[in-house]
Length: 537
Image 1 (spheres, rainbow, N blue to C red):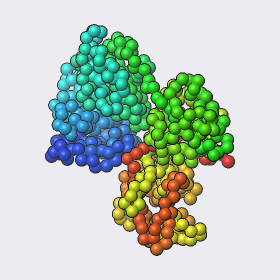
Image 2 (tube, rainbow, N blue to C red):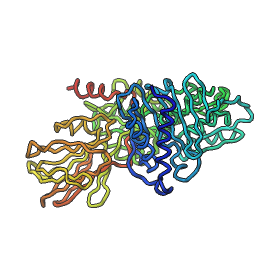
Image 3 (cartoon, helix red, strand yellow):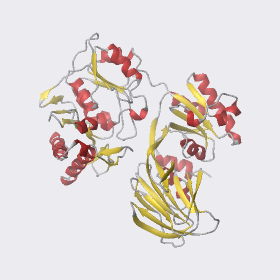
Image 4 (tube, helix red, strand yellow):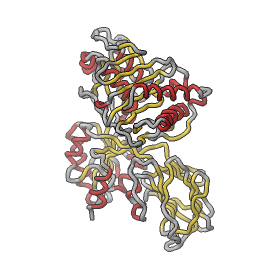
């Protein structure tokens, strides 16, 4: 069984590796794309690699959930929930507030049994074992009793903070923001602060379990508690998709005091988008608009459907919406994602609606869950396209290069990170994301990919040779398709946009920095495959 000594040894390996990075410039160097879809700094990756190598070298029976690499199944009975560097910006700037955060449990925040933090700048060690208390440098720590008129809070006040954070900061005696959630919660655990208030304006800026797994058990063992903003004890599963705002307190009275100063859920602005050219869309779109009007929420309607519904409209690209309700099939959802970076929830107005979450016979029930925020936000990466050095658009599903003439074959070369991977004759080449693997790629005979797989799939279309097969490359790769002959092709992005491609030209595809975000009530991908693809006509 994994012990606290094992976690200490992992932290030793991380500290030794980080201390070898020669400068702040090197620490901050962007080196790769992390599992959460953001760029990882050198210090993050070095720290994570050191921990993973130690685990492998010493055959520790641990699966790993880490901020950079995601989930690693090593066949263990327990999971190490790890943030290799919490407070990366501090580490890069040389500020003494950054930690390695390690926690061991089975599947949820509530079943974590070990938590270990080390401030890599000062060497301070804070740890806790379930049922045995919390300790800092070997000495027991405890939360303090709050004095209502003399509250000192740690508050997240970064550029993603909700206005409520600043409201709270104004009525407490004093507040601080360190940019390191694990240390800010630890300060509450050792009785130096009364609470830590984390409320982001956007769901994607709130915390994941890797950020607070270790500090949560430390605070709880020190006598405190962590609540979501609906006064429930905070619970989170072991994945990188779920996020939460929260209030960590040493004394429950702090929650009651803060609750009186607007720590309600975020007030979202909703958008409604639909393709008015589809005849059966008017009725479900009208039902959505009527529900939003009855609910009294702030919403706007795209001009394309607004006229048909007899309501004011604004183009989707100009909507300042947090969440866009898209009524239609998958094509409508893909079209919407080319005009907005808002979170999407689909109301199925098509035949399959694989990307949609709400069926058209359950619109009211689905929207009630939406307004109650009874959902998670699932993030999928987009595919960026560059032709002749010019950025075109992003695709959520796939990008296709195919002949511009019916029944005419073309000669292609496919490069992965500038290395020739395949040369073939075919009608075209398709580059698919995991999201698109259940669409066009699958119809070409390629396998579908679980959306948690961080990869791209290259699929030949009607290839001349049977040996020209689909292949999978890391999502961080650059895929280049060369049109070898002096004959034209078309670049088609998500089936929505066509761009003429000249002979002897190249087009490049790579992971975009922009993301597609979908609201999900049910995150079981394989049930969705069975219901939408296998058991449908």
